[in-house]
Amino acid sequence: MTSKDKPSSFTSPDIFSLLIETDEREKRKRREELLAPLGVKEFFVGGSISIDKRTCKGIECKLCIKACPTNALFWRATGEIGITEELCIYCGACVLNCIVDNCIKITRRRENGETERFSTPRAFTMLENTINAKKRHERVRTIFPTTTEYLRLYKPQMT
Ligand code: SF4
Ligand code: SF4
Image 1 (cartoon, helix red, strand yellow):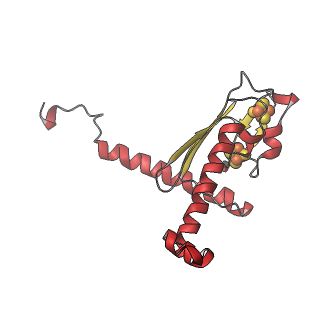
Image 2 (tube, helix red, strand yellow):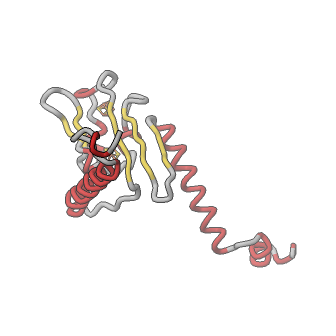
Image 3 (cartoon, protein in one colour):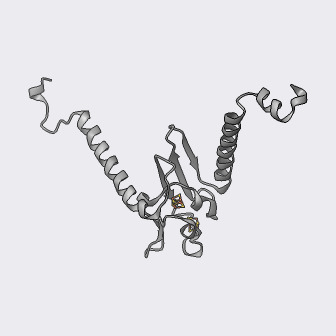
């Protein structure tokens, strides 16, 4: 097929990428505008959140709405929990407070490209423990890059 034969609706992949980029930029701008007045710091570069309407206890519960620090969750007149995605910072407080396992599902991406997924308080707690242990380890490594340096300070008799 020559370029003359191409259908008029043909669009090069570059234009698609450009449209996606523009869309992403607009979403980011909207997030910044909404989150700035709240003074909330973002730790994740992206993510997604969903609530399973079939298992959610709804009006009997609403614990996730109370736990959300940005008011990203709200009660709909239709009797369901609504999500304002632009306000969600993927902190996990809603999952931690949800009384139904796997009802709220969160996927979040860190700047270093790591992706985290959780949908139960147990999974969230385990993930946070792992992250905190990693942070502690990194802090110790900056103070004591080698075991010898640690021993020299705290167990000089062993060096
Ligand atoms: S992850 Fe955090 S910010 Fe997002 S809806 Fe849940 S509690 Fe709110
Ligand atoms: S905490 Fe869980 S069960 Fe309760 S309203 Fe929120 S999503 Fe539904």
